[in-house]
Every structure is written in structure tokens, then in C-alpha cells.
Image 1 (cartoon, helix red, strand yellow):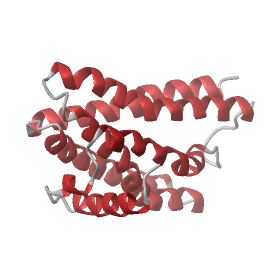
Image 2 (cartoon, rainbow, N blue to C red):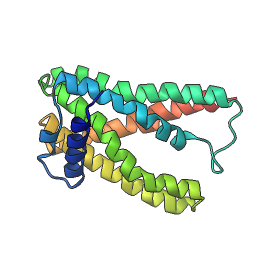
Image 3 (spheres, helix red, strand yellow):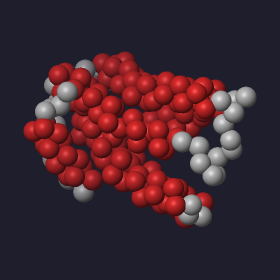
Image 4 (tube, rainbow, N blue to C red):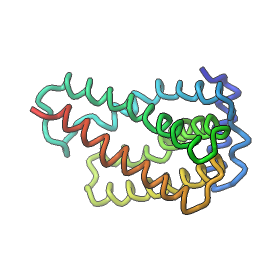
Length: 190
């Protein structure tokens, strides 16, 4: 579990990343231990994830809520493990084995930044705001997240801009447009 000092330093690094300051990496523990401790962020983030996937007025009724929650909880597990697993395969292939633990650590810590910027979208959803307003704010949040992930990959894995950008877009597409919809269909199906 990360210490309070490690948490404070990571938040400082995230604030620098949010401002596109390229020296954000120095605030993170880039060791294998730091990468392992970064997975603890999954525990306090889980309730927020449940809030995000909870079926509300805009979603169709879920016939079996237990099945849905179990399936989406398994999806949460995949969201946390699949990108680092892919990175452990890709990083040595591109000659970045030494940078891999640091990239995993920062990638996981970026969840804290995601919570901070996606909260306004969640407030709009819960307040019943029009879907076009929610869509615009959500698109801005996604674009910002892609920019931050691109910068993180450029710095943490020493990739060129176009490589990091393609990797960030691929990460978003695979996780949010393939993996999550498949789990949603499995959990919400009748």
C-alpha cells in the first residue's frame, strides 16, 4: 500500500502532468515496488467505478442486478490488469523493459487524475442533465485523458509523439470500445 508521502508526491506529479509539465515523472516511484503499490489505488476507486456503471434513468433496466454487478466487477479487474499485462509484453519487445515498472506505476496513478476530471461528468449524469451537454463534457475529458496518457507514454517509455499518441488511442479504443461493451452485454443480457 502506498504511504502518505508517496501519495502526496504522486498527486504533485499528477498535477504537473495535468499542466503538461514534462518533469512529472520525478514525483513517482518508478521501481517495481512502486508499480506493485500503485495497484492499491484500485480499492478506493472501486466505489466510484460502481457509481459510473450504475444503471440510472438513461440506461435500460437490468434484468438481473447481481449478475450485472458481478460481471462489471470482473470487467473492473480486467481494466486494471489488462493494460499492464499488455505493457509487460510490448515493453521488452520495443526495448523498454527497464522503463516498464515506472510506466505501469504512473499509468495506475493516473486513475486519481481521471477521477478528478471525470467527476463533473458524473455530476451531470446524476443531475439528469441533457445528454448532449454530458456528451460534450465527456468528450473534453476523454480528449484530455488521451493527451495526458500520450505525454506519460512519451516520457515514461521514451516514445515519439506519434507512437505514444497511437498507443493512447489504442488503449482507449480497446478498453472502452471493446472490453467494456462486451462485459456490459454479458452482464446486462437477459
